[in-house]
Amino acid sequence: MIELKEIKKIYKTKQADVAALDNVNIAIQDGEVYGIVGYSGAGKSTLLRLLNGLEKPTSGEVSLAGKALNTLKKSTLRKERQKIGMIFQHFNLLWSRTVLENILFPLEIARVPKAKRKQRALELIRLVGLEGREQAYPSELSGGQKQRVGIARALANDPTVLLCDEATSALDPKTTEDVLELLLDINKKLNLTIVLITHEMQVIRRICDRVAVMSDGKVVEEGQVKEVFKNPRETITKQFIRQDTNIDSEDTITILHELARKYPEGKVARLVFLEDQVRSPFISRISREYDVDINIIQGSVQESQDTSLGSLYVQITGSTESIEQALQKIKAYHIEIEVIDYA
Ligand SMILES: Nc1ncnc2c1ncn2[C@@H]1O[C@H](COP(=O)(O)OP(=O)(O)OP(=O)(O)O)[C@@H](O)[C@H]1O
Image (cartoon, rainbow, N blue to C red; front, top):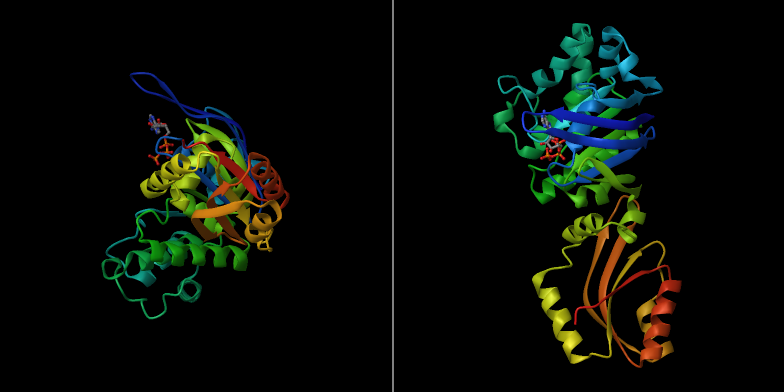
């Protein structure tokens, strides 16, 4: 388990003291994929630097498998740090070395015997799907392939934890999907704990078990990914989710205004549900049962690690009483409802 207890990190600058982390408490279980999302300046990179032992907190404790990093001797800390691999947004590869040589590098530093090194590097190349590219130089690889080298290199010394620093932010959407798929695969195969920081909610949705939302150095919301997507509490979390679902586009807002003007007696609502919880055709049933019309304005279904998340904008028209009853019934189907006043 990785634990951050009451962490504060203050940077003293000429102008002022900056609280990059302000009383952060996080516990990450072994084998978990844990995501930290936040806008620029929220404190994500600072948190990652504390986790890999590159920096120390101003106060509070960081511990790995029950060992508090600040109490370790330098030599022990070095050993503990070997249990943590890291990948980066811009890959950080050695450009004058081939794929194979890049992966051999951490093994050389860890003084693994020569014969073993090559065998291990070839295993890793297979694991990340780069067979045939052993002799290529980074400049000859696509972004996705470069990140695969980064992943193989990070795994060379059998870490128990992989830290990912905006690892897919420089990649196109399709390549992002492939790299996330690979990370999930490695997480399952090796029971590797993955901690990732990102500003993309899509990354959280696709592979994380739990998420922490950071703002101004604080964790403002934390929970199981599917629960947070279904029922976000904080405004900032809602913003991230809306960005991901792209459901608040200009077009949708124009339609919502138009509908609210045309049918002032109706209600516009956003419904959010998990596929594994909603199996029945609830819209047609409710429409029949309560004599209301349900007009679907926009909808999307998105994959998460173990289920799909549905999001629908609907307009419900009918008598005030039947609309109210229909909304109550929708709730009984485990569907979250946000009634929207766009008038
Ligand atoms: N070495 C430093 N000296 C002074 N201030 C710092 C230092 N490192 C970070 N900060 C400040 O701490 C706050 C958190 O920065 P941090 O880089 O951790 O945020 P972030 O969420 O990772 O943002 P980004 O995605 O832009 O890197 C910011 O206000 C930043 O300016």
